[in-house]
Length: 431
Image (cartoon, rainbow, N blue to C red; front, side, top):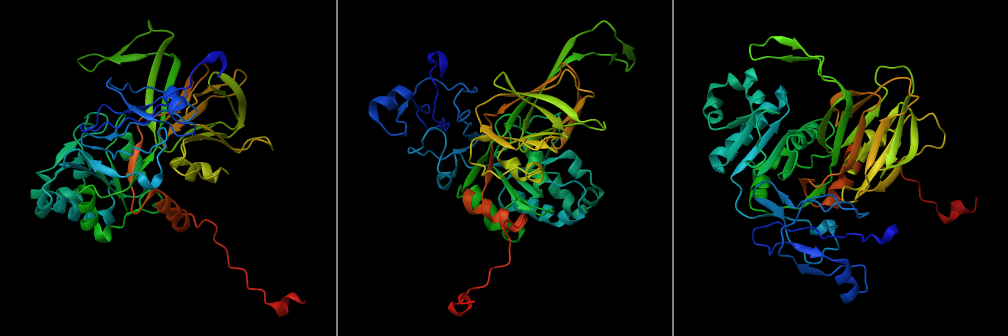
């Protein structure tokens, strides 16, 4: 690093209550004790502050997931990048609460949802959290037999109730969208997520519902592998946002023209991708892309996708990007239909900071969405800042991170499917 700046390479803190304050790997310790790339560890009595590092490997992810789950300690970890096969779930205390996420108004999920909730409440004596709008479905609210079970549920409403410290783990019933939705509910530490494949694609949902009782029991007992799916921390700054109206206590709309040049800042945690596109305009989008404060290129085309390794198999792969395993610490930048023959998708280190702004000579505004939601317009002066989040999504594996990923590639995307070439005999070689 120029200027003699020291590169921080902190090991991931193990935030269990039984740990001795976490393990921190120091560069100087590594130089003194080992000449290999593995870093030695030492105990640190001071509390760990969660903040973005300048390491090329990105920030050390938080290894506590909800109020009771954490990563099983691995003393052989090199920095914060673990061997995927060693990533195991453990509990500080037995889990007592579970959030069940179901795709809204999907009739095919009613029976699995009811069976799972009865099993969790009656057999496992778990506190079940369910979103209020799920119970408003007439097929559920009108079921008198199931009504006695729903009275035991704890309900919440999105964007209004904070359940981040109440839920020990999450069960998703549906497709990949349910996992993305679960991620959006937690802006910091995310409880472990168990996703059942009851949707269409199912790339992120490795479990089958046929044997849900034994599988859920294994998770409660702490017998499971997990993969840490990194997220993007996105900060949207609206430079010239004007508050044109407000509502008083009586509900009367009052115009307010006194506030000018005010700023509005909104932050999101994104699991798949941030998409900046041209919206309804027929013109090319024209946005500047900065990396750690330096302008690296101007995107002229339909837009640009900034994705996590998890998101590399979503919109990005449809736009021609490579597929990246979730354990790889990286951010992928993929142009959408660029008006250039040489603009190819690139992969940058997870530790960088990206910024996207409209170019000065852009003919129109741009639009941005986060995992397909919260779509909004980006005008001149606005900016979108993207970094790797310190709060990953701990996704529970059916087998392990490597086998599950390749199984999804084969089953969902039919990766490298081709008719086998016929064997060439010695007699055929003569011709």
